[in-house]
Structures are given as structure tokens and as C-alpha cells.
Length: 397
Ligand code: TTP
Ligand code: MG
Image 1 (cartoon, helix red, strand yellow):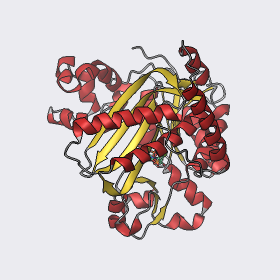
Image 2 (cartoon, helix red, strand yellow):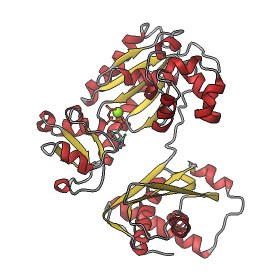
Image 3 (spheres, rainbow, N blue to C red):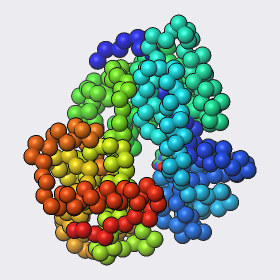
Image 4 (cartoon, rainbow, N blue to C red):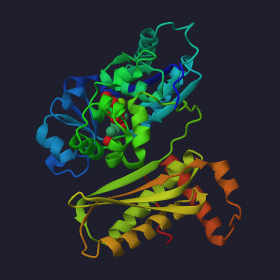
């Protein structure tokens, strides 16, 4: 990997969903605000999506069970997420930033990379460029972003996280390694909690230690990822900013009010989740090839199983069938004891745009089932667009 003198900016919005809600209702700004599922006076079973920084002072964070958040801060303002609204703001922000870079790669609803190489005449100073981006977002949307600038994506992302909220951070070209050196391992994007714990156990605590370690020492924990992680720890990353980015994975999940062992209930949930995912992927004009099933038991142990179709598809029936097959196999192998299920989810991976997907299908099937499924999906999409959440197709399995 070699590092060139690129100029990469990464921004990540601060407490994104919560800040949008605060903008819509400034009254709530003075309280801790928690966006997530219904807390039901502490009996709610979903999770926190995010919360404002006032709520974070109570130890609340994304993915925490909502019941735990309630115990820590019952006086907070609790709101259900309004995903369509957040998506609109996200698109507005991405469009705003076109003036700063020809290439923008959104990586999630509230963060993106910008390749600002060659913009030195317009913005000679990195810090100034970062501040201009921040100001633009704030003046047009009323929302705060944290921004990092570096010569590559990896370091820029770490830089944007360092001084959150409303953070600004620049890593000068050539200083990537020394910039990362003192940082703790959990800053190293790509290392999971288990890896960090195992590396700590082996005596590694700072990114600089990984950068200078012999590969053989890292391999015992990181296995075949050791060379890549060491390159990143040295501040080297030559991944390009991809302007034609497409969302790569789509997921939907449901936490039950009461844990269930009832396969009929779970099957119905899978059917519903499949419809939602089918709708979303068709709206984006995409196809998928891999369907992933997620099952969380009452004791929070979580399992995933995946199936890859021989040809890409955008049909709800294909999602439903794959998810159900995975569930049945999983049930037979892993749940003969009938453990209660807390959460069930489906994700679609391996996505491609619709035209590529169709070309891949060398032998398109025009079976009756196919034609029926396509018509059903069309009907579902029309109803769901006009009356969100009201369309349901009786299971066609
Ligand atoms: P993040 O950028 O991780 O979080 P954030 O913007 O709320 O806070 P900050 O960046 O200041 O730390 O995620 C962006 C949005 O994605 C977040 O507002 C809500 C949503 N989200 C979830 O729904 N569940 C999650 O587990 C996470 C991490 C985020
Ligand atoms: Mg954010």
C-alpha cells in the first residue's frame, strides 16, 4: 500500500437522529433526548437508536436496551425514530457538499467521505476547508457535524471522531503514523471488541504498538487480517473515495414484546420483514443475492445464518423463502430445546443495481410463480407508497 498526497475529508453528524428531532421541536433541547423503541415505563424490549449528548452523560448509548436507558434516565424525552425524515435530511446534506468535492461517498445515513484532492486553490488550508464544510451544513440544516481531514480515508475517519461533538481535526500529510501512535486500540476502526480485548491481553494497548509489532505477534490474534491491520495502524490506506456508492446492506428486525417459541409467530414476522425489505430494495432499484437471518434468544445469544441465491433477485417471495429455509434449518440444528426467541431479523447483502442483476440471470425464468410474484410486489409497492405500513400480502408460501 502506498500513500499519496490526497486530501480526504470525513464527516459524521453529531447525535444525528436526536439533533433532527431537537430542530423540529427546540423545546426538547434542554432535556436528555433518547430516540428508540417504546420504553413502556421500563418494560420496553427494543433498543436505543441514539440519544443527544445530555443523555450520554447518563451513560446511555446506541444499541443499549431501552429498559436499561429507562432505569438510568426515566426523565428523558423518549421518541420513536422517523426514518423517512432522517433520510431526507441525509440526502440534503450529501447534496450540499457537492460544492466541496466532485466525489462524495456516503457510508451511512450521517457520514461520508469527500475526495477534496486538487481543491487547494479554493481552500488552501485544511482546517479552513473542514470549518467551511461544518459551517455549510450548520447554516443550511441547523445541525452540527464533526469533520476530519487526512491523506486517506482511514485516518480521516479517526480524525473526525476524535473531537466530537462539533469536532474539527486535521492530520497533516506525512504525519499519519505519529498521529495514530498514542491512540487506544478501540479507535482503530475495524477492530471489534473481542479483538481489542485479545490484543490488550497480549500486551497491545496503543495503535503505535501494532504499527511496530512483528506480524507473527499480531497473527496469533488477528489471523490473516494481521497485515491489513498493521498497515492501517501505520496510517496507510489507499482505498479510493467511490462516488457511485450504493447502500450495500439492508436490514429489518423485530423485538417481540414477549419472548416466543411459536414457529407460526416467527414465520409471520419473517413474512412481514421480507415485505418491508423487498419494498426498500425495489425502491432503490437494486437486487440482492444474499439473505441473512438473525435470531436472538431470550438470553441475548445471537446467531446469524446466510444463504446466497444462484442469481440476484428483488422479489419479496425470494427473501421470504430463503429466510424461512434458513429458519427451519437453524431451528432443527440449534433450537431443539425450544429456547424462546427475543428478536428476529433479516438482512440483504451482496446488492447490485437492477440492470446488472437482470443481466446476471442467464436463464430468466418466466414461470407462473415468477409472474405472480412480480405482480404481487408491484401491487404491494403501489399500496405501500400511498399508505405506508398498510399493505400486507397473505403469505404465499
Ligand atoms: P452514529 O453516527 O453512530 O451516531 P450519532 O450520529 O447519533 O452520534 P455521534 O455520531 O455524535 O456519536 O449513527 C448515526 C445514526 O444512525 C444515529 O443518529 C442513529 C442511527 N443508529 C442506530 O439506529 N443504531 C445504532 O446502533 C447506531 C450506532 C446508529
Ligand atoms: Mg453521527
